[in-house]
Length: 119
Image (cartoon, rainbow, N blue to C red; front, top):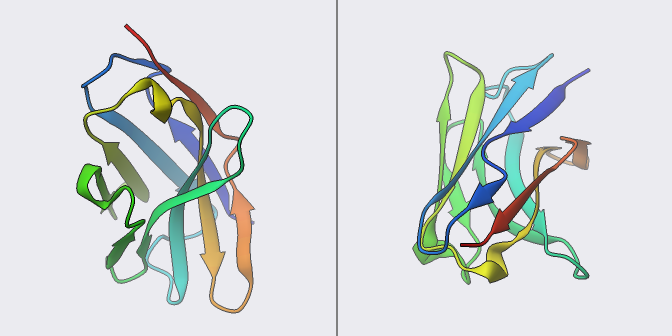
């Protein structure tokens, strides 16, 4: 059973870059047809898909966040990372890393990590 765990700072100052890492256990991030997502939920709002990296390393981003978002991976550590630049208080949210499997949708979620953007 695959497990995902987010890690990173809980507080980021405005204009800085938010960086989160997702460590995956119980499965490889290079497994065929596996997709790895970053999804966030601002307070009082719904879930927002931010972007993804797939088993081959290809990335796709939300058009609204594309200019500020970068997702990368370290296959030797079985991790993938989110970087969100030029953050504002509107980026305050619970951030989740998620696995999706082709045909199965989102099937495994990390517990989520609260990130607050404040000076």
